[in-house]
Length: 106
Length: 106
Length: 106
Image (cartoon, rainbow over all chains, first blue to last red; front, side, top):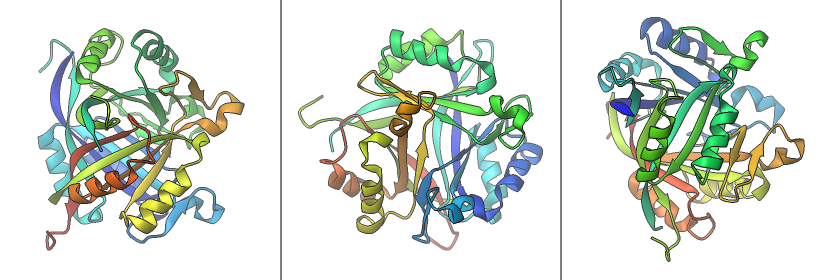
């Protein structure tokens, strides 16, 4: 399996922040990221120390959400620079990984 | 905590592709992977540019799905080689990680 | 985007084990981890070879669950040492990553 270097990114939000849709739109329309996947956690807590859990109905809309994507290191670097002002500190995690490509690519 | 090297793998599918069950069966029966976990995303978009989201009922069956597993680098290398023809390019991400083992192992 | 080194951790459980709440409490109250997110898988299998899937209602409570958190390498190292006796071998995966911080931090 032929591979190239990519950077994986996970952005940690909560549904209550209401920024997910605009972030997805931005990644899709502006940044032209190839693939983005959004996962909803069933429980969690963040910097506030408040536990967000799906057990409490009134917190249902404030469950943790992770927006995950990967692209070449150069493109991810540029994207994270663009997003810098709109994403909270300590809420973006990234690391180096490999992505499969066609034998004829790359 | 004693650890050994493993390779983490995430394979990005959509439910609509209908390949998840056969992939799981293959990983379980043939490849003898010790552990596999499948996560369903609540939204996302892929190479097609079409956004898959659980809001639109008719797209419910085409939500993003991630099949995640880890094993020794050698075993993962072999598995990915076997899967090469059945997995789309740019849909497999892997990276090096550490796994805890018993003090008496390894 | 200014970044620092962190260690990402994923702990693989099943809901049936009934250890998730105590683990979250421990990470929150004792270890003072800044952020933890819990994800429920829709299917999976573990060392037992038994497939846990949300299709079978009687297995609903034994779906795979992943407890994910990140912190500085030193803090994660200490936490994993504390958890050593309460977490099964081959169920904790960790790797090095980067976390965004404020320009003024660091």
